[in-house]
Length: 488
Ligand code: GAP
Image: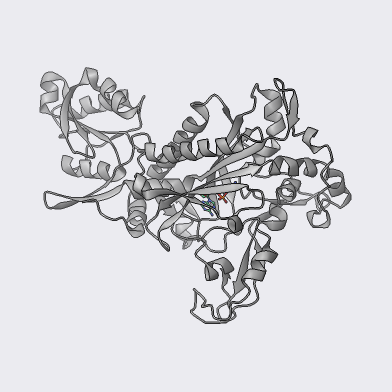
């Protein structure tokens, strides 16, 4: 029977085999920041490739984009992040540690993002009997206060023209800000989507569980623009697509579910939102958000039309965001610069947006957890990662049985041929059983061994990771055989 995975097993495997390291470890580590090692970067790149292929390349109605992380400060005023992207925190008077109020009062793990903090404050001010999770002191919290989640930085070398900038907390706004550019430079017609993968930054109050919640992370977001009135149908479409993406890549159905946001929890721009949750091996109840799918309505494009009308005011106020209000919405906003003209219906409108927003690091963790297994084989424990072939960091391990009799030369030739097509690994060190185990632990789906028989009849052993079954394949057929198994 498959073992129930613990997060500690994953963390230890990741460090031991070079998937994921603590950032700046030689300096004692930097909390909540992680580095992907040689196997980790291959795995994470494969997760991104699989998302891009499925969401962009296999569809005729989605195009890609890669925006800069730094954007005009008004973007964040218009999106609402500059004023509202904050968590409500309370500080323990005894140990000075800040804790998110919603963590003290409910099991909600995610942000009160864009929820009016006043409303959240009014509902949750009584912390008199709450216990500090850091030092255990009871009833020692200060009054709750908002804590801004966006990282700030300065841009510009001259004092006169330097300005405060934000590291983007989501990639989505770069897509909205380029909506017009994409419309004008391509032949897209509504319904269509713009997709992007990239880094986002949030100064999280509490980080947790390895790469699950960090301050620097990668998102894969799609903004799918559609005609108002068709939004609910597209919402259902994307729910199904996104759920299937995870299961097609090997996540077990029983570890995945949808959770609808109730009205109170909805971000102010959202008409509806559903989370794809994964049963992670930590936390209360274990079910945690993997991806959010939101119906953002026409909120963002309308807000950016207001933002565009605020630029002059912003210059007049010395580029100080805190001194300006967003311009009022024009009465004819439906025909504004970010509207869409439907040639066939001869109508103009601001499109609605369905947004599936996935975390690349979080899904990488889910793929690791779901693939991890331990089993007893002839009295020994075999650790393995049962990755889908598309995600496996190394696709094929190639070994000579022994380091003599011309076997290494044949194996190296095979390795040189195959590495043009797949990420391969050549290994001639130690007993062949140990080499198989090392590849099992890296999640390598196939291992090829060159042995005495190879020299006689030009066949090699192909061993499959999960079943450990071995078959003989002629070297001439090897590429086709592997392609059939790996390119699924
Ligand atoms: N544009 C919508 C948006 O950003 P979100 O629910 O805040 O929505 C989407 O984030 C996804 O990004 C989450 O489901 C999660 O996978 C990932 N994510 C968000 N914050 C994260 C963090 N601090 N660390 C790692 N991943 C995070």
